[in-house]
Image (tube, rainbow, N blue to C red):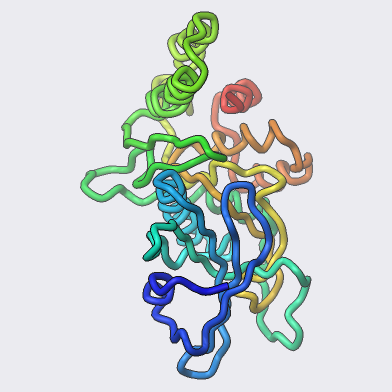
Length: 297
């Protein structure tokens, strides 16, 4: 297996001391491990995804920005993304820190873990305000790149209202995509329109959620289910950490994360008890479960 020169350039590596080999598997792309000896003699490892086509380029740009948004807020929660682009042969690529999930400890390592559980890390992520987007004067709901949940592209244009973002950029955007692929369904269109006009304002409207005080945008993973979490050593070094990967991030309401988590399972009562000790349920608390069900759509 040969590493494309564009990846070598993106990482500033010496091709004479750099190798690449297939590693792991993915439903959407080819995956590989890059090994390279740096100028100081240390060995570095990287994880790479590749796939052909414009859709892959969009997907990787979104994942690149998503990983770095999460890593910037909670560094021990996920690998950093180091490069994304298009190789000389037209193949899209994404390169991140290597996440070693094959062993539970680093032999001879003196490095301490963060000491935080996955629930604690996620709660920290969800209580850290998202950065103010470039060119805007205040925090907003959205994301600087289009992201993909699975192979579904998600538009992330910024909006000042969370209810508007969830309605327009998630519910209606996904409905439009479904109709493009499968044709118009009058009953489905009616149900989604009713949800947007009646349920969204009732549960997460700007004058209702958090007692009308609104919510602060935070970085949300966006596709957090049991298959996108695990334990590993970021960069193949140091202590084993609870980690997440394959994000589809957005600056949104923290409870939006819980929709997929609840729908697919893998997170028990003790997890949510610990999580909510740090990141409390948004008022009205009695509507918490209804909001999570809404976010499953």
